[in-house]
Length: 243
Image 1 (tube, rainbow, N blue to C red):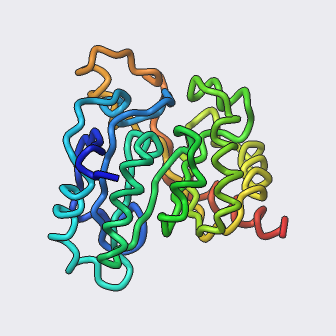
Image 2: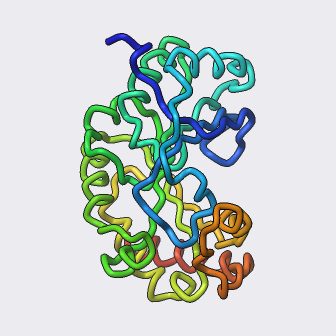
């Protein structure tokens, strides 16, 4: 396959990411996403824009920072939704593997459905859980939960390590009933190495305004970090009890 014929729409590249996988990482933010999460803080990446990178061009940029990766750093594909660029990521990953660079994929699990082709090239999946119930998922994202669960089914077959991220939104996830449902929901996902709770924030509000969009959570306060930590402690206790 001629890699010059494969291009992707990349919004931005963060060169010293510390929270998107192990070690120091280059984080690549792809444009395009099928979800419309009400707490999304990157609405500018919802729509695919003009393609601006080939796999080789991206790898050449990443290689400049290889010396910073040390033992456990690498590249994280994020977005937007990187699963909408699976063919590009596959070709990029082939080149990265030649450089022995670790590859993580930060995803909501809603892409093009060709997951069995992509997953063999990925070393770590960072999976964003939007909601555990179909109605709650649809209300939050404007899409059916079945698409994300199709990805989970393929993920389980791949035997890849998984990190889980759960945004805690006041009035939705900040209660023991939801946390209990999360404990149960995660039982269907194999190889979970860690789970992180992310308190809802309003940092994306100005982006909505600048794009002429209504901010969905205008009346919602940010999640209290201390309360979020208490919920996480409860989650860990319940998860341990369920084993």
